[in-house]
Image (cartoon, rainbow, N blue to C red; front, side):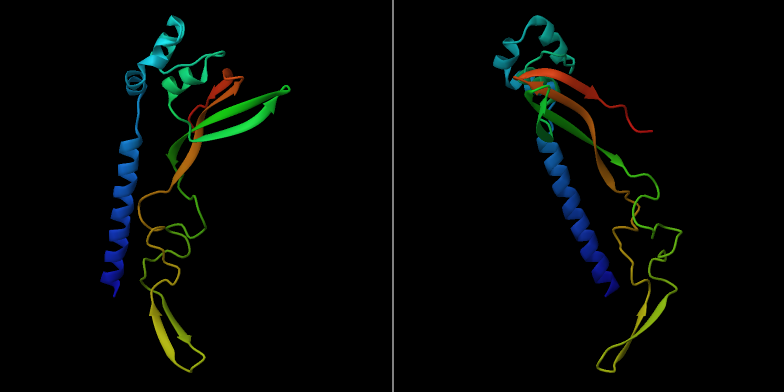
Length: 175
């Protein structure tokens, strides 16, 4: 029974990992590939903006197309209003590993730890039958794996008004 559960878990984890890898690998684009796939957009930029875009940089006043060539498609877009003007903010997200201890209190070496050993529970049903459970009833194989959770974190934002960069931020990495 335990072997079958482990096998199902590993199969699901492998399937999820392969799916995520396929999505990541097919959706990756670089500044160079965006420029080479859309030279007509790149040619409309001023020489100053072409130089910045080639280096993956942006500046205030730059067009949405130039930002897209430099930074790519955002993961999120938010509409708003700034100083009486309609705005659109593009949010770029990266993923970071959760710090040790992130999550609910059943962290390894705390209560709830045990990988199913050393705990015996006896349960009685309303039909007067008893069963014995060996192990931790709160054991979660995904939680106790050595794969720390990945947390989405915004790392760049750019706000446009009338199709031009009004402001942008590049956030320093969390330390």
